[in-house]
Image (tube, rainbow, N blue to C red):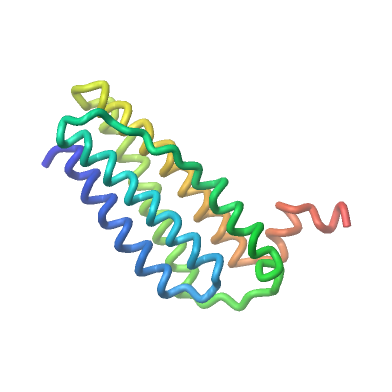
Length: 161
């Protein structure tokens, strides 16, 4: 199987996992985040399919961190509530982080092995977005695991307020 076909399978699996995860998490921001990342992964599938068909690669501008930040800002009141998070929810985020990490590593490896500039450009874009996804999942995991501490360090609420 070619690298690009493996990438297509990885992205398809990610869409399925993130969609299912969105149905299992209880926190509304977590649900929205998983659905947003699933949409990003669907865009990755479209880019991969374009390259497979020999079409010009269309980079679909996405800024996952900005999108998720908007979700968190819109739900700030809900986010400030102390949460009781089930271990299953945390596990979904741990799995998501591992999936993104594996994707990044694979894409970095194959980026240097591909034959065309179009494929190289595709894998560079996938690396960029998957790194953002990893950061989002990591920050969310930290937030859900220890909300108060997360806000202390990220928002400096104790120092400034």
